[in-house]
Length: 95
Image 1: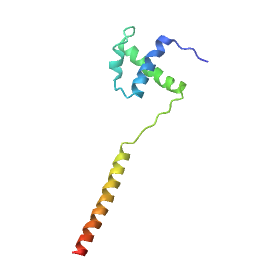
Image 2: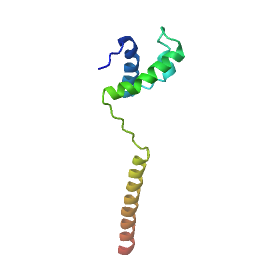
Image 3: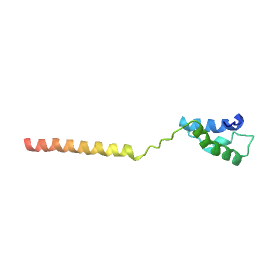
Image 4: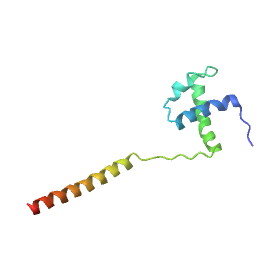
């Protein structure tokens, strides 16, 4: 069992919580409030502890492809095109 300093672990915890809640904050903006460290040391601290924290929490990352909704839209457009084509074809044959 590992023992970690609470003063050091709180920053990666808060930064990870911001990401989980989709509160978009850059790492440089986040570390500006960490006065006891220099900016580069704070960035290194947060980013180096972030992955370790996720592993300790058994956190699983899911990456969603941005193309999946577009594929659904294309399917909807094709279906609508077929339906409109069938309606237009029915209008032509009945006229």
